[in-house]
Image (cartoon, rainbow, N blue to C red; front, side):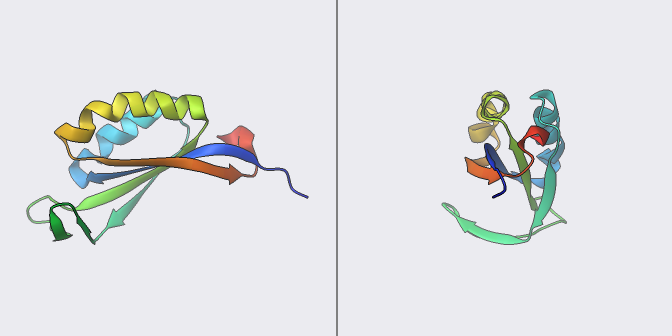
Length: 102
C-alpha cells in the first residue's frame, strides 16, 4: 500500500486584485506551491454575485497545501485581511503522497 501523509489544504476566496497579496503571504510562510483558479459566480451572506471584470469585483480561489506549522503561519498573516477585505479562508486535513514536497 502507498504511504500517505497528512497535510493542510488551504483555500482562500479573494477578490482578484488581492491575489498577489495572498500569494506573497503564502511565499513568506514558506509554502512552496500554490494555484489560482478563477471563480465566475457564487452566493454568500450578502446574496448572489457574478464575475464583474469591468468593476474589478471578480474573484479567485487560491489553493495551497502545506504542513500544519506553515499553514498556521499563513493563517496568522491573513487573519487581519479576513474582515477588512472580506476573504473566506478554509483549511482542512488531506492525505498526500510524497509528503516531503509539502
